[in-house]
Length: 304
Image 1 (cartoon, one colour):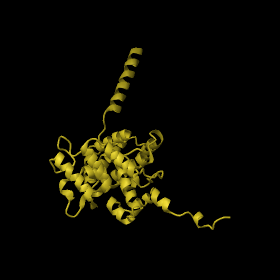
Image 2 (cartoon, helix red, strand yellow):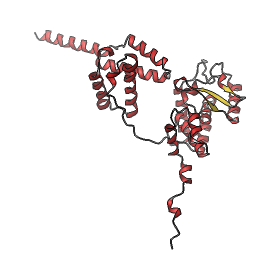
Image 3 (cartoon, helix red, strand yellow):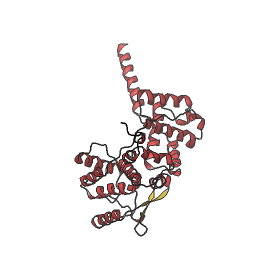
Image 4 (tube, one colour):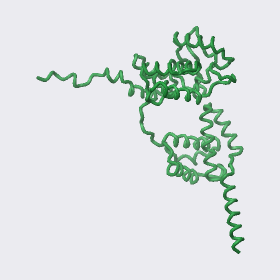
């Protein structure tokens, strides 16, 4: 009967819609993965990104991760690569999440053993000039964000590390700041007399309740996204054509140190890089060092 067919079609569509819109969950596997990430000392942002990628994988197949293998992983990666067309960086993050899920949490590394890391295009980091740093800091009208940006440039810390700074991390006597970096690794960064004066003036004005140094009106530590938003607004107001993020201030810190004669090994320690290879990128963006390098043309005898 036509009516029955029509009714059945609607019922089928409704069932399909319900199945596709119901949020699938990883259940206890998600909890275990969270525990493993925390035990591994992964940053909060990394934990959230890995869990989101794993959940997306499960939602794509509508099956528990425990019941899937290499074929399902290959299908999902093909979807990310060909349909969603993720960038190499985003793709790498999803691959890392699946490697962690199967290699660590589920104890089935053979499922992801075929995965190869995509090659990322080699791009030089954005670096501000000294003048641009001055203009940017002046454009930050809110005191707490101006002080945070000043600290980023003065120390080279990551924005996540900056937001976690506590008042007890400031060692004025020794002239250093203790930083809790990736993998819960601690390191020291320098605190110049000028930065110390800035922080003391900020303290007298803001009086943060503690234990965190940079807090909002609710007393909670400011989030990295708030810092990024403030920098974006100040960049636009200052008329700086470059895309400025907290990491750009970190790049500028390292490049300006290199140009002033600081050796790469020291810069590596200050930045918290596990490998010197990550630090050598700044030799490629230092306009001062490049300009100082004599051209072989200058060694030729004068031409008559």
